[in-house]
Length: 208
Image (cartoon, rainbow, N blue to C red; front, side, top):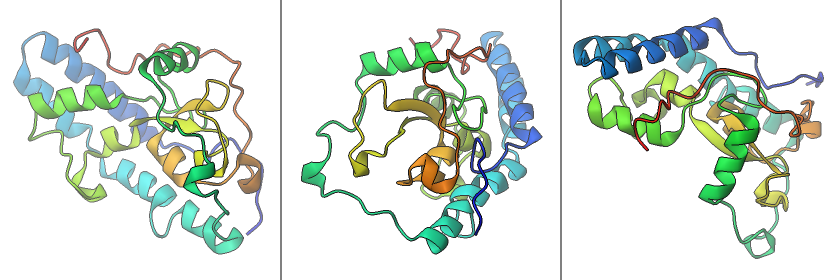
């Protein structure tokens, strides 16, 4: 497989922007006390095409599987040789959010923190599905699930530092797995560039 230089494993689809708009409307309905409308909008945002997009990146027939077949699994370091800290601290997460905002540094889609999704799960369990398998999870929340991704993978010696971490979506994170960006023809995101998007991850201060 010939690798062409590109910004992400697969370009986003328009349905993701539609889902983000529906989720924003659901937050407004929730604040206004209209739980019926909020639940309806959450259900509408669970768009099958978004799941298909996600699966085309990290699924068995997706981009990552094709890369493994072509390049082989990248060699990783023994656990004892890796940075002892893999998960960023809350203070580091806040620094990354301040720098990157709530959009994937690779594909650019809007992102939502796990804490926000859990809030909706508890309030609207029938609308925000989150089962054990991918098909049992809400398509939009799954694709837009915020990750703190190591630019140089942790398993390959990457540090859990502001310089080596960036905010990405779950498909870009799990789709790239332990490959370096240059190994799979991706453009290295500029981690010095501040986020310019107005998307706020559905935060609105209501779970803090």
